Image 1 (cartoon, rainbow, N blue to C red):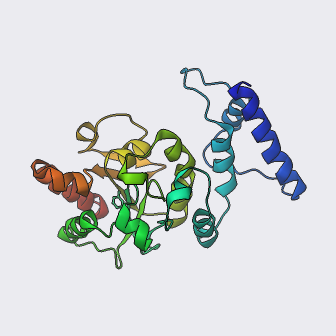
Image 2 (image 1 turned 45 degrees about the vertical axis):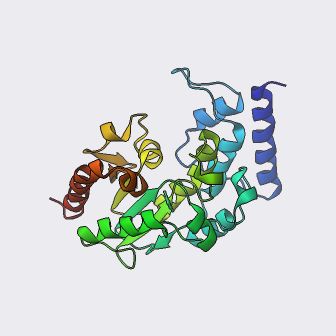
Length: 248
Ligand code: URA
């Protein structure tokens, strides 16, 4: 059976479920009508990019009108990918949902999976110190979350399909928290939010825009713990973040 046929069936099932529920509107969350139809037909776009599986399209579509609490609840019962099977807790966020700054990391580790809170291990302590160096704290001025909400086994890197399936939660989270500035820490968050497939060392040092929100990227604190040679660059990135927040 071809991927295209699977895709059409999934989209058709999704649409018919919505019709049965009496829901007549579809929120596309950044996907164009044409893109949904392309995916449903199992086609890539002109750039030769493969079409996403229809399940990804359906997941983008389904979260678009959830409010913050509903989104959190949806994430907490999520079984969209294999990571749900091994998790203890879904790690949705920490900090203040009204914060000016949103920090986006990679994925929960063992401590985060155990506690349900992001960045509570060694890397988290370093992140708190880095934020404190520019007068920011997760108690009041920062909201923290990750690209993936569940822990990859053995802390391996996120897989592309896991990112595709989990990213709609993050996108909706960003829309609802509506931060003034985003700080992406580490390669996975930086690539996802800039949309650029470049090494972090090449991405850092600039201010990007994520859906109109200024975005700064820097090294992941866990990487910094392994490579202290990146301390100066990270320091500079935090100064850049502070300047953006101060409107300089
Ligand atoms: N690393 C991350 O990227 N996120 C966490 O929550 C913890 C460690």
